[in-house]
Length: 273
Image (cartoon, rainbow, N blue to C red; front, side, top):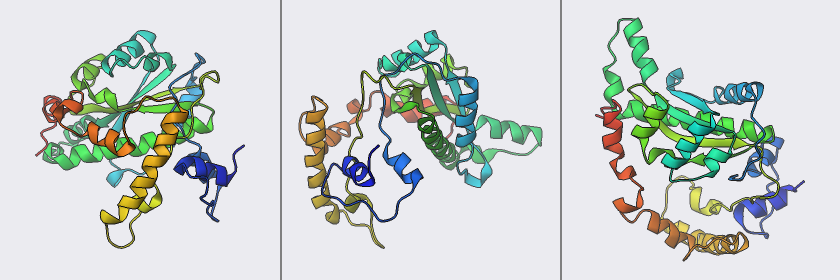
């Protein structure tokens, strides 16, 4: 079992960092997170899934609207199709369970109909944002819960590459959209994964006022840490983390079809006023 100092060293890619004096089992559990893309075929049973979703529903929700849903996909043919739609990532089909997290305004619309009340606020960007944030909060709880049960997970943002096709595959009604997916399964010990370093706290933590300039030294430190990680993991990444990240935001062509996301959302019934 890793010590707090070892976990901090892995999380920041810096063996010289001390562990904070404040510590808890939950903090230790969260720092052990790593993305898993290789799975055993062992299923996630109904009882385990129920526990994971109970944890998800224990997350905070804006005004208790609970504007999210999740589709549990176990069927191999459907998982294979999801893998195809999500940038041909075959490990999506390999994982025995795929959770597709939904920003869901359809249920709120139905509630308005049932109570014979207007629902014009659902046409505003704020409503979509509430659904997306609620889904993210719930999913992060689910991820921590799944990992506590011995499962590995990885979030799948490329579920947004072809949202109309995903909606059709999952029979999603108007005013719902898949915002990301999540593979869940027992990690394959023959193909282990490592904790990926994160930016130094000096980059992301601001005291009283935000500063871009103050982040530069930490970013340079992180470039070095990620270069070591890339080498250790035998990842063929050209350039520093800063260069790699900049390439991802270069233009519409780098968004894998998501440059049309507003059009897709409007086609799904989100007016986004």
